[in-house]
Length: 323
Ligand SMILES: C[S@@+](CC[C@H](N)C(=O)[O-])C[C@H]1O[C@@H](n2cnc3c(N)ncnc32)[C@H](O)[C@@H]1O
Image (tube, rainbow, N blue to C red; front, top):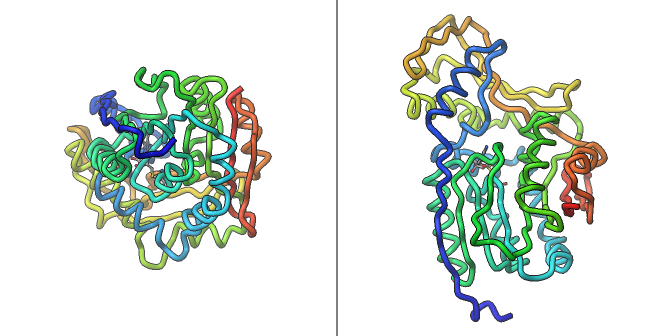
């Protein structure tokens, strides 16, 4: 069908990922040993902008490599997927990748899911303007919890899209649970296109998360400013240092914020005590051998249709089918 025959539509669905949940989840994480916070709280407006800046860094091979795989293989992906599709993107952000996918696959509908409401709305509106033939149904939700897609997409074959190796932010058991939720949400017979960062020499990994311009450090520290804003917290970013290192046993890069001194911070009216050198764990980024990822996907009910890797075997793109 000629795209000009299609008439788009825009409907925003707010599932209200709650403020109350955020306060209790953050306080619980800050009360544990070691202290931790979910990486989903990186993404206020500034966090999203800083993530975009990271994707353009020399050391951050991830986005470049994944886009290279898109360049080479998206036509084949489109042929394998066929017609009458609804692309569902988990954690849509504002990347170039979705534009490449929409242009190759030309789905009937696109459902970007993101927790960051304003950013989601602005980006989804921009996409709708640029692709007037597309039905765009943004969903503001926390994708780590089970959700039900808007009924307005019933009847279209779902294609999940989860690029950027965001799957690596989950612990292995949580990654399995997330993929099982995705399987339920998209339904049997649907597809999932997912980008997965591969295991590689440690130096390349540590450089990618400790860039010389300090953008990753600023991104990491920004989570504290986000908490100040949303939970009336009193973090002073000058009193914390960024650290990112590879955990060989776990097979993941781990990011931390290390307290420079003994200090007490208020969060949502509660006092949180940090010792000097105490670390707040902010992110895991698991790296996978392809067979490790295939095993997790298979336990969640997906089978591999195709897998592509770059010439250096640094990154893998999987097209999976929900069975
Ligand atoms: C790293 S960006 C990825 C953007 C884009 N998909 C890419 O690969 O370049 C992650 C996006 O996921 C969103 N996000 C992170 N955790 C989320 C969660 N639990 N639920 C919904 N959105 C989430 C963030 O707000 C952000 O826009």
